[in-house]
Amino acid sequence: MRIQHYILLTFLILLSFSGRSQNTTVRIGLLKYNGGGDWYANPGSLPNLIQFCNKNQIANIQAEPITVEVGSPEIFSLPFIHLTGHGNIVLSNQEVINLRKYLMAGGFLHVDDNYGLNAYFRREIKKVFPNEELVELPFSHPIYHQVYEFSTGLPKIHEHDGKSPQGFGLFYKGRLVCFYTYETDLGDGWEDTSVHNDTKEKHLKALKMGANIISFAFSN
Image (cartoon, rainbow, N blue to C red; front, side, top):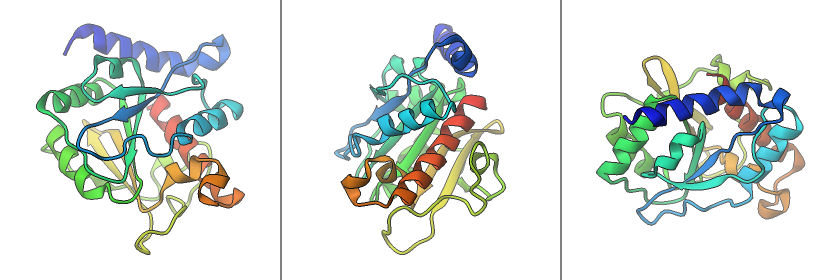
């Protein structure tokens, strides 16, 4: 790994801890991938989540997320990247290596299944960490108790197949490097309520869980 990538990423993560007191900000990213899936789904979700986190002093994040490709060295300047969509994902060998290095260096990936992503994401993340498995996190995991309490795990925002929401984690050397939210549709819930006709209660639950994810990523 290029040493400057590791140093830059470490610096930005440390900066996120002290940003509120020094008026500095970090930027988070929306991951753009190949394969035909709509990586650009829910365009208002991350800006709304950022606004919520900043307003409630959970983090100090630049108002607009940056769109970043999986294989770009730019991801090393971002402590947190988000991936969503409904369809296919295809990672090249170079993208697999780049994402693996990013996560090993201290980066954090949140993946939210917008319905239809599951099989493709599981196939591709296995290329990134072939010896590791996605495991369902217990409700006692700190990600559910960071700032807001979710004693029964992820909130159910939208119905798809009538399944309960599940949160899966991928660990590297004991550290949670990827959190995969399935059958919940947090990203839809982060959008303005008028987009999907969500109630204010569901919108707030989704934002609070998103804030927990951000808080956990920045502090771990």
